[in-house]
Length: 259
Image 1 (cartoon, rainbow, N blue to C red):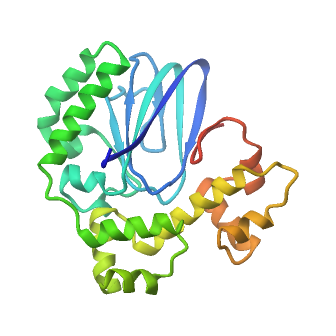
Image 2 (tube, rainbow, N blue to C red; image 1 turned 180 degrees about the vertical axis):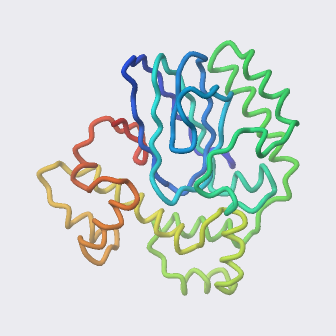
């Protein structure tokens, strides 16, 4: 629980293919295919290549489309913001906007785990194998900076609306120190992380509105200056307008939808 946020399980059979759009919620993740006969494509990973047993993605600054053909069963493991740094011990900002195979980050140590995953007969076994492997890795990690953990708690409690000066006063650290901790252990600056959390807060408010209700109320409730500012940020983050997002019916999570 301290390292994993939640699981998403996708299960479908579409010969013509399905496209899923994923955009940042401040959390990296691991994608594990549960079937062998599907084709997968992203801007980094093309159709026709052999599908890996799993791949890992870092913090995202732009949306990413995942295109899948054939019978599909896919497990998405959504991690806590700092989890990749704990797993690999490398600066998290080196993983931003990237898709990585297990051996890219774990090295040959991951091969026995991949073989065990391949032999797992059902979802329960896959999750047990994954959690055992991750827990072993986390136990070997050097731990997290206390100021970073407290700042995450404060940012989430204030839904991204806390001022930087108030955050620094509460932590009693300099902005430069906090920035260094964030880039190394989370991958983005504190201000960018606050923007992501505030945007997620807006999406929760906005998703609860009926299409007939105006966008303005949600914009100001989430702390944005005006509708135009939010509209531009929304299009950059998701690739669609707020109204297009609101009318999308196939949302698997606030930041994950079927196209």
